[in-house]
Amino acid sequence: MIRSLVLVSALAFVTGCGDNGGGPFDYSNPKPGGKLRLVTSKTKPTAENEVVLDLVVGDQPLTGYSVGFNLPLGHGLVRLVDFVPGTALDPGTSPRAAQAIQPRTGPLADTLVTALSQKATGPGAIATDTTLAPGSILYTIRLQKASNAFEGVVFDGAADDFHLPSGGMRDRGGTTVVEPSEVAIGKLEMRQ
Image (tube, rainbow, N blue to C red; front, side, top):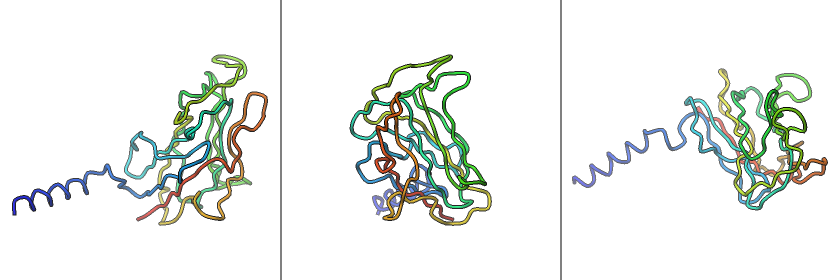
């Protein structure tokens, strides 16, 4: 009887502790594969209504200079609240060669647009390609539930009809190293 009570108490604690995917988001990492992968970050969200994702190098090393993607999002479900370059590709300083935006209107409306490049000239410039180890974090994005959002699929990289319109990696000369089809994206859903 005491063992049963201890087990029930332990399960109640684990269920309520918030370290197991609480909040409004459910992100499923992509299936194995992909030269670049959008995965759940080890960085904890700063609020309960946020999800943190990392763009990382897949299982094989890559050599490149710039990286990014245009990821279509479900209308009005999330908003971008932070974009932090990793240390693998140095965007330099003042100004950094890194940006993420989420346009509300125009041809890129409802799209998360991210870009990171080593800086060609100026403070912190790196004039050559960089070899990136598997698992290297290229950048981290933090998304927050929009204030009036309902349940829904924010994006689904596992869907048969999913198409990343633009994305991947290029080298210093502009040659494509990773095609959009080689960027593995998981599924982000919002629940109530």
